[in-house]
Amino acid sequence: MIGTSEQHDTLKQHLTRMYGEPVATDVLPRLVDLLESYTTKIPEPKRTGWDETDIVLITYADQVYGPEKTPLAILKDFLVHHGYQKLLNTVHLLPFFPYTSDDGFSVVDYYQVDPHSGTWDDLHSLAEEFNLAFDMVANHCSQKSEWFQKYLQGEKPYDEFFIDVDPNTDLSQVVRPRALPLLSPYPSSTGEKHVWTTFSADQVDLNYGSPEVLLAMTDVLLFYVQNGARVIRLDAIAFLWKTIGTSCLHLDETHEAVKLWRTVTEIVAPHVLLLTETNVPHAENISYFGLADEAHMVYQFSLPPLLFDAYLNEDATTLNKWMETLYDIPAGTTYFNFTASHDGIGVRPLEGLVSQERLDKLVQATRDRGGLVGMRTMPDGSQKPYELNITYVDALGEPEGFGPEHHAVRFLASQAIMLAMKGIPGIYFHSLVGTQNHFGGVEESGIPRRINRRKYERLELENQISSHETLQNRIFHGYQNLIAKRIEQSAFHPDGPSEVFPTGHPAILGFKRTSPNRDQTILVLANLSDKLQGLPLSDPKLRPLTYDLISDQYVVESHGITLDPYQIVWLSEPDD
Image 1 (cartoon, rainbow, N blue to C red):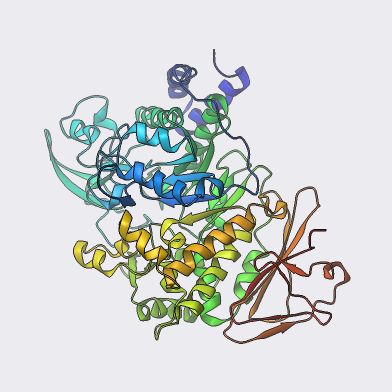
Image 2 (image 1 turned 180 degrees about the vertical axis):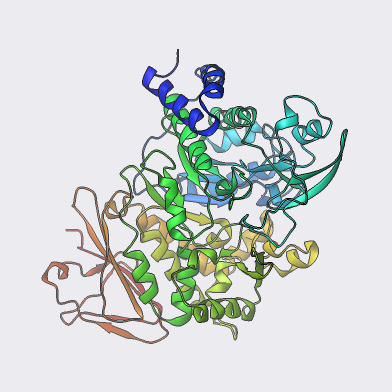
């Protein structure tokens, strides 16, 4: 039998905390049988653990398209053609299943590849060059899914897969991520049902109060591992469990589900990493580390808006204070650092970190740069900003326009900060290739998030990144240089210590990284302003750190260092 008796006991504890002891006793043998069925299906891992070479590319499966081949095949060709198999070791494919809305996050069938993107063979071919990360859309599925259609017909066990609520029920305490109705009406074989839909009427929430749903989604998780997933991203996980009369956010049973999936992967596929997606304030976000028994990684959701704020105000003070709180996390866990994703820049993660005045300034700056602002509904019916819909490239631009050189320098500096921070970097495809706001996508669809979800024809993309000294050309090649330098530095190992370096200057961000075995130290200094900034480096321990790894030059003089506008340096001892 797969797993130890201790692991079986742990599984039963998870189930008991979710459903009570009698149900746990009934469900445990079925769960163990499910795990047993996958023992011969899990491929040998290409990699275990993590180190400084871990960098994840976040992309849609149909991100690049063209004639003759499927988008997945073209994506592989594009990445390999530009040498990324030597720079990026993991590709995170956003949901690539048949879907009906939200660019993939309304899954019709968890077990199929959307034929518009390719086939399982295409995915397995991509896995020959890269580790893969899959999205597990755990909270909801499409109203067109077979599961939901059978629910509407009252077919067992699907009759308990979703949540029907009397529309007169007081749901005012439920935390809302959207300014949309929480319940949506659907005709069924027994009359109209009002079903829980956290995100939209096309995305119906699964009912984890039924162990049948937990078993079904555990099968989905293991199926993804069978097909080569090294990382499983648990989408919208914070909303998983519903108890009327509560916020329905971060409930104990939700955490228990993550712990159960962690135990499941440790039994069947211990190389697999769980990544939780919780776009919430920092303290709530890191609660998904648990006691090193939940997620291996959590998204660093406060980083994108704080970095935007720091450059906008030419002031690293708030960013520094936040960074001082980051490092007390359980062993065996790390952050997933990013600045951009398929979603907007969430502003809930700024709660308690910036003033209302600074938040208002971010919102206005987004609009000034052509971006849009998503809203959410509060319990009292009012609306507040929820996310900023803008490419990170344009967020780091200026309303009156930058020349491509200065724009690229500032944007790449923001990325170099992210790449150097403690954790594993996640790079969104559109940051890698320097995409600006895609207004046509918004106008065509009416969906604000499409501003940052452009799809490229392969030849068009190649022409844009190869056009000499354009913004996209500078960003594309500059980013390649940063990645190549980053993966060579043992100080950037996710387990290496990190500490804020007090610069004494609000416009200069500083922090140190050290390798786990203490054989390398890197001092990161970034000038967030448009002016020259000087910084004395009088600490004797820092005197050997004179060589900038980014520019391959000695940059520290006897008096210290002078940083050009928006310059960032990774200072290290020169190689002998």
